[in-house]
Image (cartoon, rainbow, N blue to C red; front, side, top):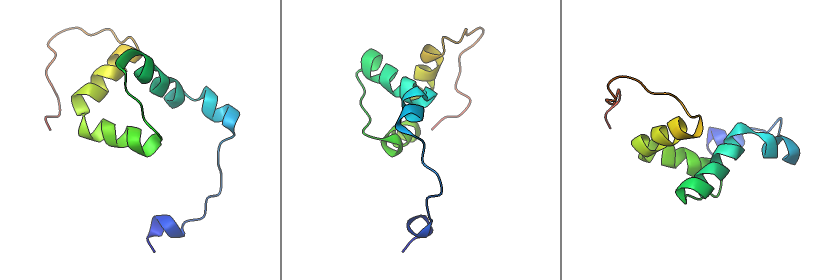
Amino acid sequence: MSHAEAAEVVWRPSPERVACARVTHFTEWLRVHKGLHFADYPVLWQWSVDELKAFWWALVEYFELPLEGQRTPVLVA
């Protein structure tokens, strides 16, 4: 048994809290605006690791971040 499997869950957010969470809104935005669907957080996380460029550009769009200057990657995967 791994450490994660042996760990006791001490708190879970209520469904209302999950519904209001920014990550929930971002996941829905990805579905509506990018056609991406993530079954749960681990799947979203894996996408963010596997598709670095798409993930970070989605965050830029979602948060409507103003970008100035040269747009070169800081981390090249």
